[in-house]
Image (tube, rainbow, N blue to C red; front, top):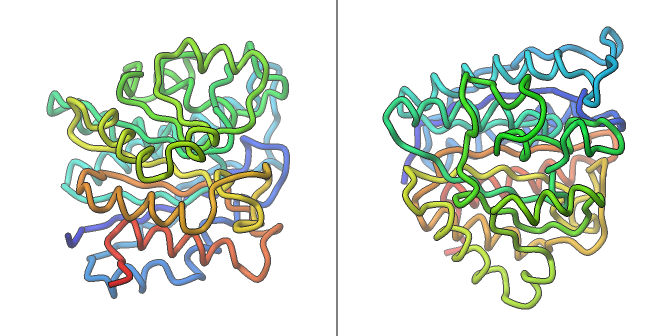
Length: 303
């Protein structure tokens, strides 16, 4: 299915302590994402960079979420651009940047479909839960909070982006690949009502069954599914260019299978790739993998 695609780069690195994810969008562009999408038959417009404040010129502040105002400002801008893209019937692809940018991406998509009295589903692929709040986070790093905010938990600065909350119903939200949770965050995940597939479930059921169930949950009563894909959900042996690597993740073939099955269902309405740390990558290897995964989600096939 040919798409009219808008590509946005969001060089945000305020949400994490380790630097380098701000170069993620450039690394993925250098790996040829635009040309390769066009070769698949898609019409692609690179919308450039969504402006973000830099850590050197910002203060972390005194709240439980570092750089709260600066991150929120970037997410508001991103949400407006993603909403405009979806309003025009286009498919937004967002390149990060740390995972805090998902508060902008998902808010924009949800706002666009909300204006049509429709809901969206969300599949969140990640090694971590991202379900902390300023009250539960041991670090104050916002890249560990975006899923909670999208479900309506945490600082109103984040939960009210776009003027409404929650952005997604918990029953339409699926978390895949987690294997590292903070203590209080674990309780948040358990009590949230979202559907969770840890690495144990992937090992026991197989990726195909996990994705089939995830599609069912995320698409039930919704206009479509947004995929928020954190590179650290992959095993570090496959994807070394991440700042918060956790051993025992999804392998190369499982990741492509997930993307291919999501493509096959024809229900994807948006995609973002986050947490690619170019400083820690090996000759742009992780960025090239990210491009290959985007292509699998957008129709590339073996045969």
